[in-house]
Amino acid sequence: MASTPFLQAIAITKTYPGERIAGLKKTSLSIQPQKITAIIGESGSGKSTLLKLLYGLLSPDEGEMQFKGERIWGPEEKLIPGHDAMKMVTQDTDGLNVYAKVWDNIAVLMPNTDVAAKEERTNQVLKQLNILHLADKQAFFLSGGEKQRVSIARALITRPEVLLLDEPFNQVDTSFREGLQQDIRQIVHDTGLTVIMVSHDPAEVLSMADELIVLKDGEIIEAGHPKTLYQNPQNLYTARLLTNCNILSHQDAAYCGISTKADNIVIYPEWATPTGSWTRKDWAVKQVLFKGSYEDLLVEKKHITLRLLNDQPGKYQVGDKVHIKIGKYLEF
Ligand code: ADP
Ligand code: MG
Image (cartoon, rainbow, N blue to C red; front, side, top):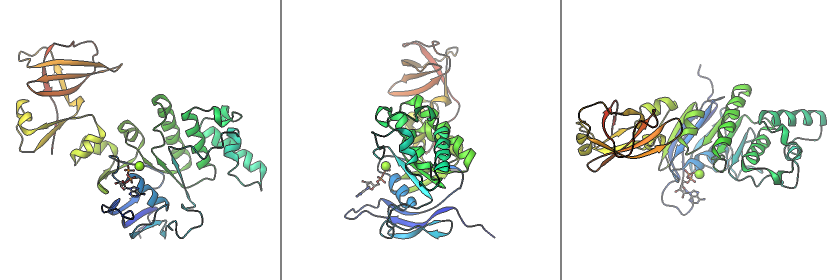
């Protein structure tokens, strides 16, 4: 017997009042429990709409949302909108009381009936989010990244089964982001939390997600494991979201020695390698963008510019002539 899906959308649609174009076209999907699912897509593609529908902050026009086989109630049907087994964190940390200490900001969400349990649980989430050292600090003095950690601790203290994140790391700088991403992965691993996150940062979704859902114009155009989608995207749109790739028309592909019937070919920066030791050096290095452990090289031939990844920084200078070996490309 098939078990009841954890969280699913069954043929839902959503058009905002007064709008002609649907925020979300007919969509069905099933979210795997105890995993991180990431939703990616251009701005306006319907990511937040889908997240709000899953949470019950919006009602679908057609179809149904279900959590463990039961219909998720919309905002018209519930006193406090949002499913009780879920919590949502967005970019805005307005929910924090900036005059209160971090500890109180978190503990306030626990009932006062069992003070010892409240204390223990508060300390536990402070530890999980690595903010125990901030417990006595007034929220006003926290950095953006620290505030975001407090917001997530507040969401988790009541042990929701699902945590929904709508681009919560946007205001957080890169070094902070990575730590927070790792901690969330750890929490999912340790507690069996289910996370659904919206992001438009390829590095973030590729390193964090177990499952990726790609939205375009209110439609899911593909879904799967991040590695699969990265290596073999079925759509040019997906490749563009996940990498800083080179897109060539088929005429330009021919200039690069690739004959194709497809409209476009896509070459990821790591799929093309420069070699200085070839006789036919028909590409010129136009720019060298130092990235620390590697470089991005912009090379040019006629009107075509390619971005390549060079893992031997310092090897090429602007003006050098190189041969380019294209090891792999995709056709669309
Ligand atoms: P994303 O989160 O991917 O940027 P959204 O889900 O916010 O996209 O929006 C999807 C589409 O629905 C967009 O075209 C947006 O303009 C529209 N939309 C979103 N919220 C509203 C609203 N409250 N009223 C009218 N249109 C909306
Ligand atoms: Mg959004």
